[in-house]
Length: 80
Image 1 (cartoon, rainbow, N blue to C red):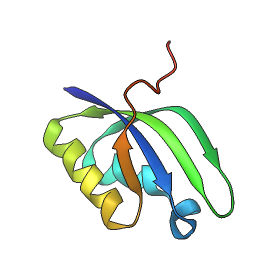
Image 2: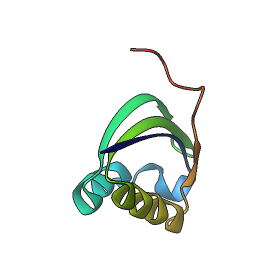
Image 3: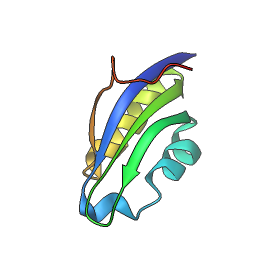
């Protein structure tokens, strides 16, 4: 089991979509949302994904494919 700390940036078209739901259901990845701010036209989320490396990679590819910007969030995680 691996952990990956990521920053997700959601464009307007994806802000109201159930992106995290699909990541959990379709890719067997467990999210731990550390911080988030979602508004009508923009959103971002710091999330810790747990799962198999291949599943996390597939989830990242899915999110990038629908327009979510995915970057490393190392150094941007709240303790605890």
